[in-house]
Amino acid sequence: LDGGAAVDRRGSATLTALDDILNESMSASIRNALDDDRISARRHVSVEQSHFTESSLRVRWASGTQSGYYANQHNKPNQDRHTCQIGMTEDGSVDWFGVYDGNGLHGQKCAEFARKEIPQEFEKLIASGESYLTAMEKAHMEVHKRLIATSEIETDISGTTATTVLLADDKCI
View 1 (cartoon, helix red, strand yellow):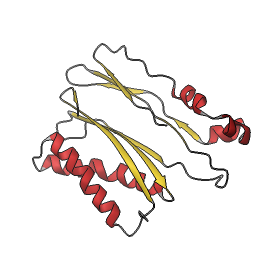
View 2 (cartoon, rainbow, N blue to C red):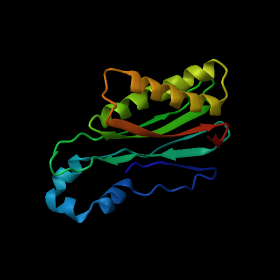
View 3 (spheres, rainbow, N blue to C red):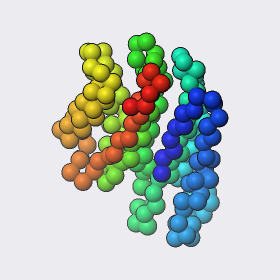
């Protein structure tokens, strides 16, 4: 489970307490297998942050993640990643939010690859003159191809989903 961002021109958006959501999502079987300390160790909740765009749009965000529990893999790494890049273009008018949910044996490596590479590829495409939407689509596709082609990460049974939002000119893309 990953948290997201709320956007509100009046600044009155409220993010639900992500730790409460993670608590509620725990099934009874996991609660029986792990004590509170071991559950807390599997969680990460970031502090809420915010900023105002040039047109006074207030953007607030936080993230929360919890590694899954597998009875035969007690130390399985958390495969979720997220990124938030404020003012990522040269003029500072573009904000990037992304959630990357790894899956499979090397899902955390796939998610980390996507977290680093997709925004960088997007920036290169914008610098070359592509529109925001086209650059976003091409960045995801190009990084997908590179992930599959890399010999450093086994992608036959691993991968990641990428959910990204671009805030540009007070529009979500």
